[in-house]
Image (cartoon, rainbow, N blue to C red; front, side, top):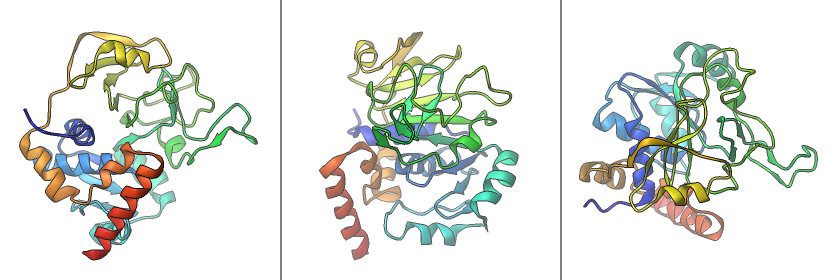
Length: 271
């Protein structure tokens, strides 16, 4: 039995979704995804290319995860450097990269919301981080993947308050809705255009997943348990890819997240 944490299991699941030779789009603040992408290159996909939003570049080499100086490191790795507009308009439509988005809300059809909680846009219950390039990518892409570090009915809802990412909607004219979703409870797909549970993580039951989902969840006939990481995958994550533990920030909230962030910055500054 391999000793691993849930964040490491998520990184490994992300890595296993990568196919060698793909272009992998890296978001601004998605360390779980970036750790998984790097892990894929170090294990089974040596020819992937990173489209880095952090470094505004296309890169083949990678940098260990960090917080304070990570932009500068990724800028130095770039084969070419481009601005956001050129990337969104020229490069992304041509290369159709695989990208993992983290939604604040998601419905059964895969529509997502990163704008705000509440029906009133001018006076929301909570303003969310914003859409970034999600509205630019999801209406045409067929390589959209999703992840939710903390599975709850707050995120998985019957109807999203605003649509910032397009799912399996009648309004879609090209591309497709999301192919895959990963949470801290299990793995999901949209085989029939509606979110479906395909695997539960070790120790998680189907009923637990259903209770934390705010809509009726389809369950695959052959639902199985997520395979654990290998010892080598865990070693690479802990010792090579992310020795500072940046990936763990996405699993935490409140004071625990602030404490870990301070700890990471102190270690990074000491390097």
